[in-house]
Length: 257
Image (cartoon, rainbow, N blue to C red):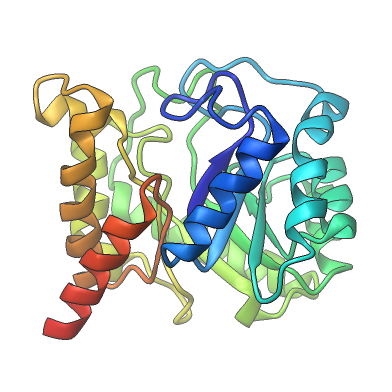
């Protein structure tokens, strides 16, 4: 899953894909390098990021989705927690909804129950404005697993088929360094109902913390190391900024496995 943020303020690629031609060129490059899914976001979810309106978010993402929908066999994911954005994106050609708020909004569940889209359910404590203010867990792995169990039951009871559901532990979303490391070690411990785990850890701040505030470009090789580790531990979908290098890593670890 290639990250394609059409925002001015995302932590790693903010401002790079504001022009439609640049965005589409990046999308084509990601696909050539081996991406299966393009994850398009119109609102930054970095810690402390300011929210944007539905209309503003739609103005950023819909032109991209409509152009990419003309391509064959491409997974187009809309990264949003707003039901209105998800619904418009699905009508425009998106086929996956990636909701960092974990489908807590009943309206978001209704939107997806009325579609055949795939859904990514992420765990987050708080919201992007508050999530890193001293998050506390008694057992982070167990609490994430319990959240996934509850979400699975709620979503399937709403009419969403189990095979449409993917879970994301939300690395860096309301977690300390120790919480993140526990979730990287214990992928199988919070996998529920044999649904795939998506891992989104590319270039995140915990990598910089482990490497004494390493700048973003130097977080890429550690990201690839963690891609290999989490694939070995059972994560099946990997959300990344650099596609080719991570695809190569996956091919190597899968050959060994």
